[in-house]
Image 1 (cartoon, rainbow, N blue to C red):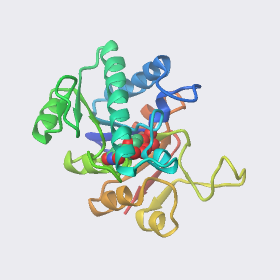
Image 2: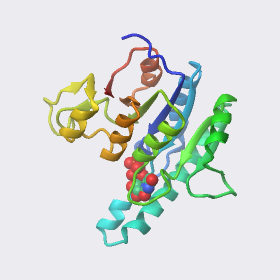
Image 3: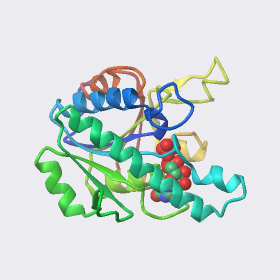
Image 4: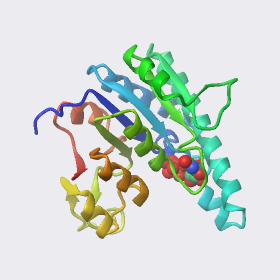
Amino acid sequence: MSKPDYKRILLKLSGEALMGDQAFGIDPDTVARMAEEVKAAKDTGLEICLVIGGGNIFRGMAGAAKGMDRAQADYMGMLATIMNALAMQNALEQLGVPTRVQSAIEMDKVCEPVIRRRAARHLEKGRIVIFAAGVGAPYFTTDSGAALRAAEMNCDALLKGTSVDGVYNADPKQDVGAIRYDTLSFDKVLQDNLKVMDASAVALCRDNDIPIVVFSIREQGNLAQILSGGGISTTVSN
Ligand code: UDP
């Protein structure tokens, strides 16, 4: 595979990527390792927008399943993403990488609000911008937040780092015969209801022609390899 021609990417990491072997929460050693992966990607010369989920702390759907009001639970999930963003900011800055956190829920004691032009300036100055609190509204997820920020920040691709090394035709954790796709179209993902991202996030990327690259963030060095044209991943595009 040839080296992708990216100048600016959005990297989405699930909250679970920060919990390591713990069943819950933030594991500082794991966050430090993730920060090294992100730094290695940045050192290839890219501008990087980062979105981190909150599933390691709280998901609105899980609260709703136990009887909570869904919107209230979703706001708790959004707050979880801000904690993860601050943890990642800390880890990146300990590696000497300048960052800014911008949150869709304003919290001016700890981070900036989302201001597109300011975010663009940070990127131009070589800072990583971590977008927290998803789209800032309940009934969405950070996948949709990632697709939205990728579109508004004119990113060349959305890279989704998860615990699986791509998109399969069946759940690889349940079915040993599951086959990984190298490439897929957005329409097939939506028609076959393949678990890449939420349908709203996939549709936003399709409509704005932003390819989604799904890869495992657990494999050390995989992200940097993908950025130089190798590694294991699935690319979803038009
Ligand atoms: N959330 C939300 N609106 C958003 C983004 C997130 O309501 O725009 C809430 C939602 O409850 C979600 C939780 O925050 O479950 C954590 O985000 P997500 O589930 O996307 O995290 P991930 O699975 O990537 O760790």
